Image (cartoon, rainbow, N blue to C red; front, side, top):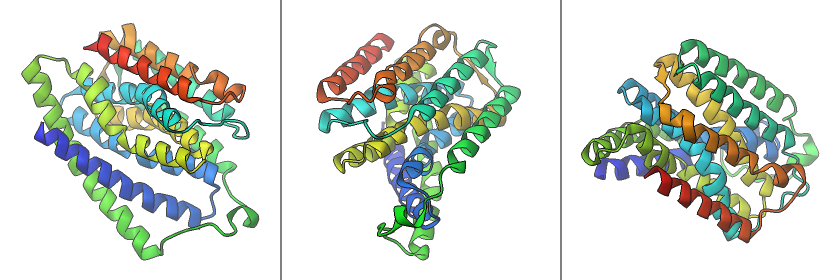
Length: 303
């Protein structure tokens, strides 16, 4: 358990430094706050999942690698957004994330289709990375801000400080990932729990802590576009980049139980966002509480 706690601490601290550096860099380069949320913040906070999945795959724990991605996507929607909404109602009106949500659904369907081959191998990984390239091109092609949008923005750091934040984040993340995977594997063996269940629960929630911190902070500042964009962007990145890169490094057999339940829960929770993003319905505290209870029930079923 000490390895897990130590790994999580390094992941959270390293992820925070990486996001801080990346956000300031993106703003200096002229990206809008919305696009920063959809890409830089979302992808930066997904860095722990990437390092953990690669580390797990290389150590032969493919269940942890797959479970980490699927479980993180489920947790991002119903746990992260749920807790965020309980703290502060998320008003979605005025923030158009319909296209990004459609991309997230498309990525989910693509992963499920590839999973039915029984393995996310190198060819499947290359397909996911090609889809990621299309998503990034689409997001970034509309992501440059004009002078008015960035006038008065708080960049908050010089180039040296940004470089230090990015460097420390990139060093601490792999160290934390290695400790977390080693500790999680030991727990799974000790209690006779499958790697997949450990990945779907303990590892998934642990690596989602940066998303929780970023989303709560964004919502409390009244930036619903950042909170929602962070989750949607992270889920896209988890499916296309993390699974894609991990599968290219080491092919991932798909546990049969994921095909029966978890992948469908992941798709279902993504579809839950439809009324909030397509019809601009606010995520109230009551809805957030319902999301959190849903997640608790899902974990109870797993365990």
